[in-house]
Length: 220
Ligand SMILES: O=C(O)C(=O)C[C@H](O)[C@H](O)COP(=O)(O)O
Image 1 (tube, rainbow, N blue to C red):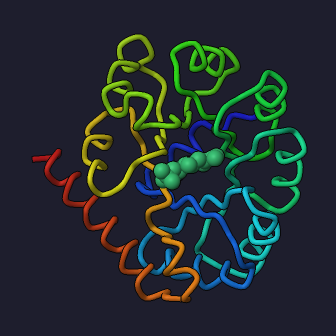
Image 2 (image 1 turned 135 degrees about the horizontal axis):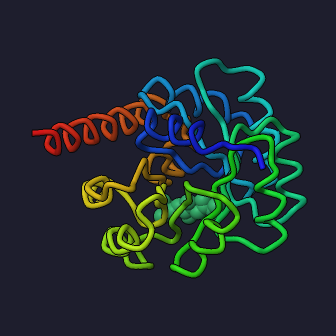
């Protein structure tokens, strides 16, 4: 199996917040990605929840510098294959199946499956994965659950998503195993629909500033 652990750890440490994006209009893909990048968030998860997801990944990969684009909501083998062919630089899934896990582990790019229980974590760890998504984070016990996983599984790191925003990001970043968090709060539907890219850059900047302040507090 390709060893992607150090690659994905490096990537997520650089990007403490990963915007989770559903593209409803393909023409918004480039300006939206630019707005987030310019606000300091260059690692983007484009979900396959809409038919524009794959072409958006391809477009961003081909046309935009300074952005690392991955696929989210990859729920089956076809999605995995198409996401890799579209140029995804990492793959994120909300959960796993035995076949998706097995194929995902052979993927040429890092594979981050979602887990929400100790048993699911153990299945992924047994397959050799050390960085996992925790989803749906808030409704699965949130930062408290992640802290508890740290006891039996000290070598597993996480990118939690689901119900995270500026109101609770500090709780997650306080858990040592959390490399970054993901969320859709950086791309509100109305701002994207209106093409309000300045507002989206401001949201990204606000998130970066908040993370910097939290981390500074931890280092004191
Ligand atoms: O389907 C996937 O693969 C996902 O990536 C799930 C998303 O990460 C969450 O749905 C984001 O949650 P919110 O920030 O609460 O909107």
